[in-house]
Length: 443
Image 1 (cartoon, rainbow, N blue to C red):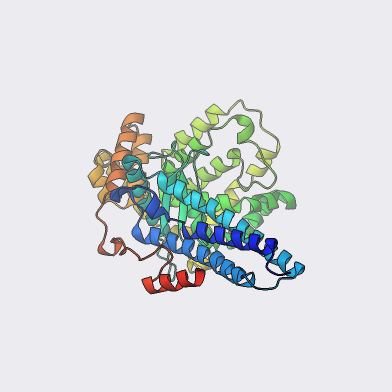
Image 2 (image 1 turned 45 degrees about the vertical axis):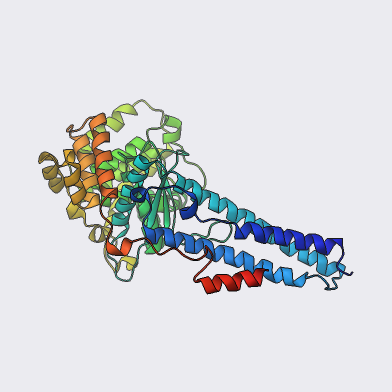
């Protein structure tokens, strides 16, 4: 077959796709974000490096394919079908990449409104503090927070996750809901816990330990395996409780799980989340062990009062018998991934201890955003949550104080190494010479 219609059509589609890929613009070039609301430059640079690598991979493949169907080459029918199949697969990869780029653009777009963007910049700082656990050899990923109302609470796309299109995410993308921003940010500590659990290998250690602790009480393999299947969410809750100061984190969890009774007691096959009727008492047990606080008692009573008349499946009380041993095992366990230390030893629980936080609340710290911004972010968050629980802040003043603090935190001067990188010659470039080489290769 001598350069027929089929080969020309493959070449045309290859050229179309190469043009589309060359036209890609990175999030930093497409979303109008004021400087104070922008993500950390190094976080954005890491994100865009991941995009560049994925685009280069697809383009390199297309350039190779283009050479195999160059004008004048004789293509047999089998070779033409193979070329078309390879191009079709590359097109699907590119389609997936464009969806991933839409995700990034949508996430960055939530910072286009300066007041909201500044709150998200403050949340970035809070997440950085949560991820910085001081584990030797561990360099936490940079987080970027974004706003989305798809669900109550939050979610995380963890760093090092491979996204559609081949982008290996170099940062942690943390979703926060409008319901949570700015007053319910202990939910975001739970998301940071997911990143820590995987990065530090503690999830793999915790799962069999939770399962074994449950079995010691339940003596039922199936029930113990069910507990083990919840390990990821249980461990993330534990991180959130230790980092967030106990009572404020329990309060945040109860608000997220303020659900109709059927949802609160539902156990769904394959769902990594324990039912709320297990999750809330377990969180109270962990908080009482690490952060004993009189505020926890009314939190337990209000939950029980609301749900006292609910029809409860018989399976729930039976599974709940494992709450105490599971909580004890998690808190006593020394994890290899933490250097043989316990979770409480890497979470600086003293900084958010009820006695410390209570003293700051009584000194009026919750009503002083600049003073709050000068405190460690996790401690400041605990102060605001505790002030609300103690009645020092009503709903409106809690919202105003949280906005003022988070905006102040997001507006803190950047350190010198946070300065934006110099403008690159081209979005695919490491240098202008490299860009010129690439353009010559694509032509």
